[in-house]
Length: 378
Image 1 (spheres, helix red, strand yellow):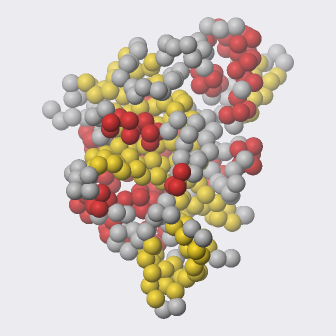
Image 2 (image 1 turned 90 degrees about the vertical axis):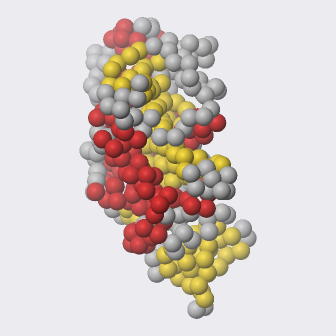
Image 3 (image 1 turned 60 degrees about the horizontal axis):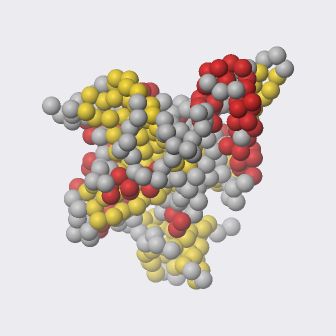
């Protein structure tokens, strides 16, 4: 029988097989068993760091946008009204706004759509169900990429997806942090093993940019790509960052090697969250207010699986022309920053391995990722 995700049976209980050092209140795992049966598991940690009620429990209960009394919330979660009130006070720090009304209770203003495993799995294609091995959904985690890198260290990781409602140490290229609000972003990572060496993966991050641009364009979000890994959108105030891509590779130069692809996308952002970010940012709901976060995740998984299953054979050359069509600086003047050195030229897209081509004084220069930063000329 073909291996794959084919059915969901609800099973509740503790699961001990997670990497150490990941305290959590809620963890969901989609598990293959016997090659054909998947089980959905809700688990709670039993350690001294966890309260009986977590903020995530509270957000899920209030995600319907309706008013809930403190008494009803406390009864639902088995805690006192005082405990509920203390947790409600913490929500603004997660980018969520709470309205309180006498006689009605509390409700979330513009509540997030929580990640729901059964909905995500139901939206997957048959081929993705056959290729995937595990789907992890975390309420709180340091980094979805780190989680899957640890899974590879344990002998797992291939064909696994990790999603998180909130990241405490999300990171981008060159160690930059990625801002997170609970339920406001898509924090997505997928692990894959390639039999070829690292050299065969040149341009993979740019190919991921193409599939994300294709996918979001189909949803009504007009995407532009900035080399090597930024997802941008045009807004009335100019070009803003919607998300980014981080690929981490480990293994031998001759193969095999393990790859973790991380994608972070802003779905909704609070006003306070935007003011705390040191660059112009945008969210999908700015442009498509009614988009389903779970449906978008399902589509992301499908597109990544398709890409990963063929990339080793095709390489980036098959994606080059599409990337250049999305390139925000195509045939425009740009600045190349390498440490303290700054040079200018006309960006002419990328080559078959994903190197940036810049023409300067009639000479073509090629740049790999590394410590190179690209900026437009005003």
